[in-house]
Length: 406
Ligand SMILES: [Zn+2]
Image (cartoon, rainbow, N blue to C red; front, side):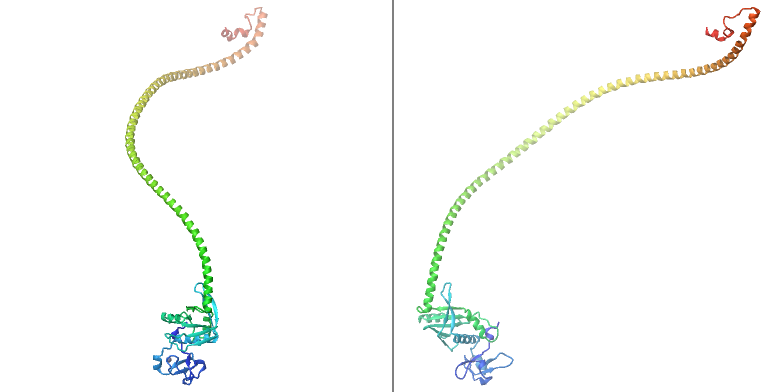
């Protein structure tokens, strides 16, 4: 965004005293123009490279000149109002609405010095005069306001203090854009006239609305006061309850403190009692344990003695048993000896049996001889008339078993 001090001069006064644009003059000194501010001779610079502009022909003029970008902006604003003769202004001081004014006539002040008591633009609308001031860096001073008020005239100030533009030349589109929604405020409003009646009507409506709003607010405030009062009552009750509770808390704290002290004393004395009781119990317990131990020792000794008696009797029994075993052993030895002897006898008997068998066999042979001889012998006896000399048979008579059998 360009700044006002970088804006180049594009307007000047021509030979006939009219304000002309750089676009509508000849190049160089042929432009025949003078400076709007210092009336010094100007030269038109219509080069191919730079933005077209005027410059002072004499350096001395340029040094003393008070022309600035603000001067250029003033001309642009005046040109717009002169061309379109319209302005949107606010109506009312509170919640303002807007009013589109279409001027019947516009008069421009050619002077640019902001300190003079001459408005930048004077507009007429249905016979009512409205002064227009352009504020860029210098706003209307207090004395000028008072002077305006004295003559009962309506004055509106157009505020360009935040106005921005894109190049070193202020273009018409930027001014158009500003006037679509201009930043302006009334420095003073005449007591009579259309603007004044519009203001009064607006203010009446606003006042009415304010009264309604005020009544609503009063109702709300009343309700709020009721609420606050009830809340305050509750607050006072709560405060009182809190105070009571605090006092009770303090009492309880004291009680707790006393109880703690008592408890500590009790614990202390109980600990002493406990320790002495414990000592006594330990002593009693030791005595009881010793007595029990002695009794147990005595009982165990008695049991031991009984057991010793039993062992002694068992030992005696064992000795008897040993004695019996020894006797049995002796008997066994005797039996063994007897058995040995019996075996010897058995062998002797067997030998005799063998001998007997041998004798029996020999006897059988003899017996067979006798049995074979007996008939012959009996025959010889009978033939010889000799009786049989034996009671039985020859065999029976001669058998050795006959003697043995008897
Ligand atoms: Zn100048």
